[in-house]
Image (tube, rainbow, N blue to C red; front, side, top):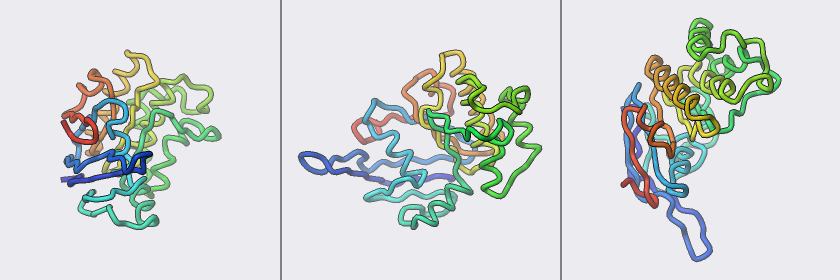
Length: 218
């Protein structure tokens, strides 16, 4: 099993006492498998994604990635984990404006120390970016920028890719295409894919879906 989340709980301070955002949540994900995490705003979806990505710490429970228990790791170890094993795609593209499309695509792979030019070229071609490789982010449409963000994440062949509403800024047709490409490329790379989405249509493109409601899996 690539990812195991076991009885994870997360609380934040509230006006009237601790607010439980996640309450003993458990799930698992295999390599090459895709999972949609659904639920209303405030249900804890993004919080869970941040915990899995090592961007926040759980109050209780364990998260295991590729055989390593990441809950309890120090900041340096978590940073190394994010650099080498985790790819992230957010609703905001977060491209580096001073780098071209080709340079953005290769950026994470270089940081991870496993740049494969052939794979980067394959990703670029599959995402329809070969004709815009010399352009800068500001010269791209929103859909093109999101494709670059996806390509940058998958070019490093991470063990796990996390995506938080990755098509939220796109029109329906473009969103369908981008989500399909994301699923196909992660399967090809044998990368586990965990996507936060509120869209039933987007979730339908993935292998499985789970729904969070008031901090628990429904």
